[in-house]
Image (cartoon, rainbow, N blue to C red; front, side, top):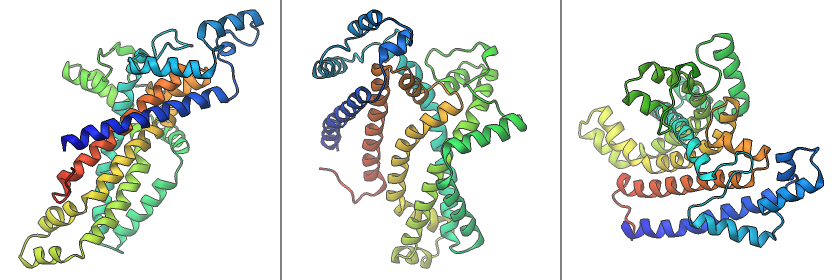
Length: 334
C-alpha cells in the first residue's frame, strides 16, 4: 500500500504540471491586458509599458513559464497583480472558507443521497422509489446559479430565515486565526459567532449539494439493486438475519465501491461548483477568489487558485483509491 501511495504521488506531478501549463497558456491567449486592468483605460502608453516591464509581461512566454514553474517548485507562486500580496497568502486566506463549504455540502449530499438511494432500492418501483428517482433527476437538471438565486430570493429575501451572503455577521467582530470559522468559534466557546456562521453556511451548502446528492442517490439505488439479487444476500436472509442486518451489513457494504467512486468524483464537482456558489453568495473562498482574479486579469492569482484546486482533487482521488482496499478486502495494491 505504501508503494502504491508513493507511486500515485509521483504520478500527480505531471497532472499538476499539465493543469498549470493549460491555465498559463489560456490566460495569455484570452483578450485583456493586466496593465490596463491595473492602471485603467486612461493610462498613458508609457505607464502601461512600465507596468508590463515590472510584471515581466514583456519577456517571452517560455521565459515567463520557466520562471513561474521554478517558483512553484520552491513554493513561491508569485505575487498578485491586483492585491499586491503573495499568491500563497491569498489562497491560504481563502482556502478554509472553501473547505468548510465543500465539507458541509458533501455531508448533506452523502446523507441525503444514501438515504434516498437505500429507500429507493429497498422498495423498487414504489411511490418512494418514484419520488427519489424524480428528485435525483431534478437535482441533476437544475443549474446551480439559477437554484442559488431562487434560494436567496425565497429563503433570505422573502422568508428571512437565513442571511443573504457572507460567512458571519460582521458586527460580531469574530476573525478566526486559522480561517476555519465554525471549528474555531466552537472550540473557543463563542457560540454566538458559531450559530451565525452556521446560519450563513446553510443556504450555500444546500444549494451546492443538490447535484452531488442526486448522483449519490442514483448510483446507490442502482448498485444496491444489483447486489440485492446475489446469492449471499438470499443466504443471509435464509439464516434468519434481520432485514436491517442484511441491508446494512451485506447489501450496502458490498455496494460501496461505486458509491465511494462517485462520492470522490463529486468532490471535484463541488470544487468546481463552488466557483458559482461562492460568487452568488459572496462566499470568500477560492472560487470567488478565482472569479475576481479573472476579472482583474490577475494571472498569478488565477494560476495559484487552479493549482490549489487541482492538488486537492488529486489528493481526494488518492484517498478514494485507498478506501477501496478497506471497503473490499479482495482489492490489493502492489
